[in-house]
Amino acid sequence: MSVLAQVVSQPEFVRPHIDWHAFAPELILLGWGALVTIVDIVGLERTRRFMPGLTGIGFLLAMVPVLTLWAQGDAFDGATLPRVLFDGAYVVDHYALVLKGLFLISGYVVVLLSTNYMAEGDYHDSEYYQLIAASVLGMLVMTSARDLVSIFIALELVSIPAYLMAAWRKRDLASNEAGLKYMLMGVFASGIMLYGMSMLYGAVGDTRLSAIGPALAEFSSSPFVVIGALFTIFGFAFKVSAVPFHTWAPDTYEGAPTPLTAFLAVSSKAAGFVGLISIILFGLPELSEVVQPLMWILAAATMTIGNLIALRQENIVRMLAYSGIAQAGYMLAPLAVYGDVPDSVQSSIVTYLLIYAAMNLGAFAVVITAARRTRSGDISSFGGMLNWAPGLTAAMVAFLFSLTGIPPLGGWWAKFQIFNALIEPGTAAGYALAIVAAVNSVIAAFYYLNVAKQMCFLPAPDGDNSPIKIPAPLNSAIALTLVFTLISGLALLVPDITNFTELAGSAP
Amino acid sequence: MFLNQFLLLAAALFCIGVYGVLARRNGVLVLMSIELILNSVNINLVAFGAYHGDVSGQVFALFIIGVAAAEVGVGLAIVLLIYRNRRSIDVAEANLLKG
Image (cartoon, rainbow over all chains, first blue to last red; front, top):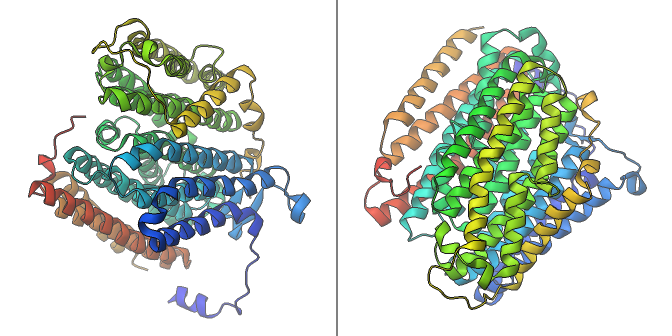
């Protein structure tokens, strides 16, 4: 009864102040998504071919407020970053803005990748783009969410459209199966995560991470809270396909339409990481003694098992799936030392996410383009690519070298940041994990360079060397990702924008 | 305040749900087991909300009810799709792709 009495006794309702500028990227994407849906319903077949372009424009429009917010919003309305909305449940700071930019641009690249694939495949293409926009909207919310409820809503908004899109090829049994496995495992994982969240809420009596963080100090050894924290982390470990929660990933990646696989491997995984970083760094700073060993084991197992299984893959999409699992292991690694150096942990993971998005989307773009000719995902079918697509091969070699971590490409700089964060506190655990990561980078070089060898030095299986025709959307996707991969390594562009200093205050 | 009883009920429901997800092979029954897990979370949240005298637990539970409906809608659509192509909703038979 106390709750009811409290609600009734509240003073009259006062409309809360809402910072529309800070909330603009989400609102623009939401409005534009609704507009695209209406255009599709009214126009039917006549407007179908404009859908990819329209959706892409929506992502670019939503970039505008991200940029104006970044360039110090006070020029417009006198407010400065970080902007706190809804009593601290929603925070727009530099960390959130960098990631909003990442999600919008990678969403745009996924639209470019999908354009020809969907138009030629006889699918329901316009609905597909609307679902991508919905999923990206969830990612934008995830970057700013600092509250258990909004993190949960954001995670489901990212996932539910993705379940549908994984099963998009309706009559293909492999695609049905990809969707079923992804959906059942995903919903199960979010159930486990919610149970953990309910424990955290029960201990503190507040859903805001800024309230949970300090309040957990007095519970740091209570099994109740530890179980809550671990269950919450397991839910995100599924999303980022950390071993042993990775079993859905290779099957779903292989069965789903390939552009969607790129979306899952980059955007959806990055969204999982954003949720994990927010929960751990803002919500569980006091539990570092419990969470750090767990993250150590998860990171070491994820990179080792991902790499070892990737070694014996024959299909390039499965190979990229397992390599993505291994890459997730590198990104999890800094969380094993977050209690000591939270700032470097946050900026190193975000740096890695930005560069990983560029190089992995690029690799998928090349695979999608080349598969238009080879009609197969077998690595051996990419033989002789240097002859029939020299430019494409050069781009792929750059992406593979970057994924391996060879200087001066972006991937090298990303790995360097991870090692830096691991070594910085000078603990034995940090050094040991850095060694595991270094050994894994060497193992990974073997299978990445094997693909490059196949493309450059082996003959085409069918002996056909006539040049390939690359559609304009795929061409621009490859150019965009290649430029970012190159300049992020050469010009060290990324460290400037991921040098966050906001964690010290742990967001109000 | 009888907080313990609610928590024990929720824990029991949660365990039954997890057992169902792991042991059942019928797609619809797996979805129902997941519903049990989500309902155990709702009981937890409402009980804690009442215990702390805080409404956000109930708000959280309402959000979960809404999202669970969407999840089951999508889940049943995918199970139906599988049934149309295969004439079976046995999840163990979905083994074309080998992890």
